[in-house]
Image 1: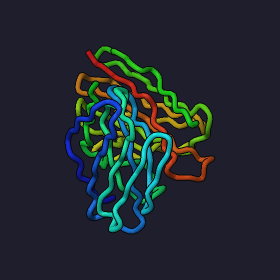
Image 2: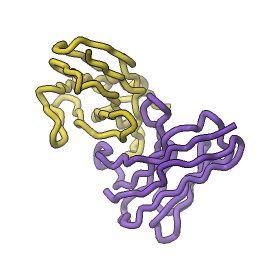
Image 3: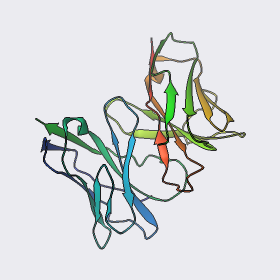
Length: 112
Length: 118
């Protein structure tokens, strides 16, 4: 599974869009980009995933660059409850449990 | 949506005792479940893959006799921390893959169990 790099922390004003970047320059052609988040003392929550096209669901949007070496998770209108650690993971679909590739993630602080 | 229930959410036990943590898929069947451990302010680390009806597969460095895993049904996996010691204190999280969706991204995580060994 390819390695990802994320900034350790970010701040965002409530109501504004939160844009969380992720670099995955060694991603291979069959690896998907997944985003999870973990609110303090809870299990991770799936947000969104994609292969090469941009994706949107009720929680967020995922923008993947054309060369697939980086992506951005967008929370369009951040709320205080979006304060969490966000993990970007790349992996081949359906290859067992996520191993030690939940990196440090980005700690997002949404401020009033 | 797929829900994974993990119980208990918090447990305090005495050193030397054993603790059982349950992971249930409430509205779907899960042939495969996963157990993770998370230290404070650290990321999750996969401990083992729990396979229904067969032995669990442990990650390198995880003691299988210390962390007993049983996956007796398609909706339940248990992790037993045997002869617990203070260094076993941690946040344990399970996840399950929804067999029914056909979409292998469908991993749902439990809410975690905070184990404190005193």
